[in-house]
Length: 152
Length: 152
DNA sequence: TTCCTTAAGGAGTTTTTTGTCCGAATTATA
DNA sequence: TATAATTCGGACAAAAAACTCCTTAAGGAA
Image 1 (tube, chains in turn purple, green, yellow, brown):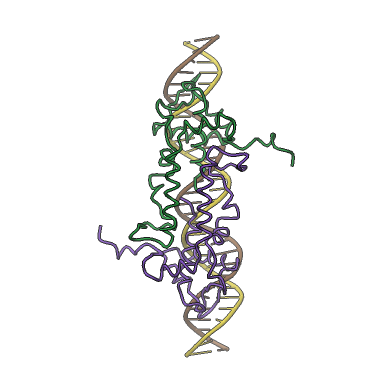
Image 2 (cartoon, rainbow over the protein chains, first blue to last red; image 1 turned 90 degrees about the vertical axis):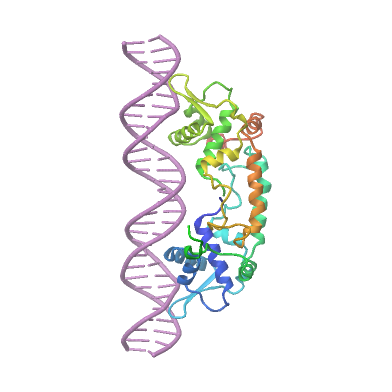
């Protein structure tokens, strides 16, 4: 309803990495297994997050990905600005290029406060906190494997 | 950020048709020109809206599309359930198949109230009202043509 | 009846997103 | 130094979304 798969994978992976002991690189393969996401595709996303400075990567034995120092408090908005592009917050729900208070589409004034709530929400959620929530065991980062589900 | 192009075109077209005198069919070509969207693509969307009972279509001279009798109070939610699919309201923002209060993703309880606002908003907006808003001239259904913009 | 106009419908194309494969570079360790 | 494990990077493939083209059917009017 709102996010591309790429954004979803990026957020899931970042939260997962944030749940792991800092300084111990996490393998792409392990993340992909854990999230049940295509490994080769995830690798591209992680590479991109490295280039944008959210992650550090290490090659060879004991390699993998770590949150870059100080990035534990990265907000989801910061992530989405990378994965969805810089216009993420600016778009008109009807797709108009120009849609402001002065030149509004008919949905503009209803949509605006809702959009602002989304923006506030994304600004307000940080990797660190989401990771802690996951660590309590009350929240899931991925669907349960089919094996764990009640038989159909 | 939220809607597919198909949904955007559908909503724009329905509002536009609702602004026109009822009973006088509107040409696909005229709608496409007015909204500045690809006519052949729009035609498919209008066809689909006919099949789903929102529009009536007429072929030949004096043909075109009309809002079906009684459909003036169609909500945007009804439209979106057709264009985005029946899971529109159900989806998890992280893409999990199963994400409920009991089996929640780490964003679930922040996202839920925002999603409910979106749903309420879509339930609350009806073609009739949106069409009237456009008729006041205060709101735009499409971008201004380049010719109307100040020179670059 | 004939002509013109319109939507219907099917097939195909293009673009974007998502996903795959493979060889090269890098690194720890035996 | 040799080996195995890992990311990097580029090219490629598949799937989905957006868009086009063309033929057919239907309806109104001369």
